[in-house]
Length: 147
Image (cartoon, rainbow, N blue to C red; front, side):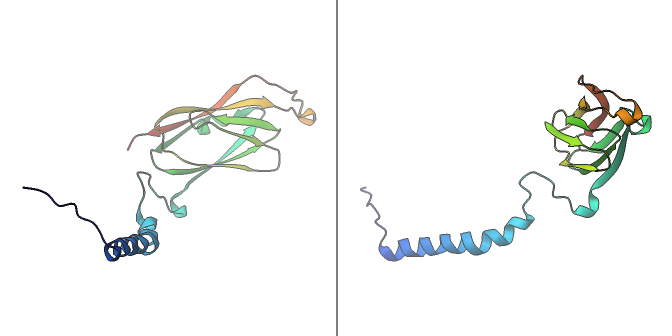
């Protein structure tokens, strides 16, 4: 039995193109807000906000361990008495905190594990007797537990 090669005419090609355009412009934008592509979409009301204060290069012992579940949204609000460069390991996030200016670290805890938040450099504050210091100090840990 011999198979015949099917040639699509311009009407079939136009119809296929029209379906492609409708799907791309109408159906996809409507469905995108409900698709999560593997990441949990967290409403802003469910963001876990934690205030942290660095005083004399230390954080209160009760705040030295932050525990969250994988997929949770998190805001860490840092305040300090001297300029400090901080780094969240594992998520590779670095930021600077200045006195009198709260710094907010916003992240989605999508990687499970235990991650150190380290001070990489303190600028010093002569008014309270602190000299500049450049060695790394672990201030606290972020523990992200699997779901």
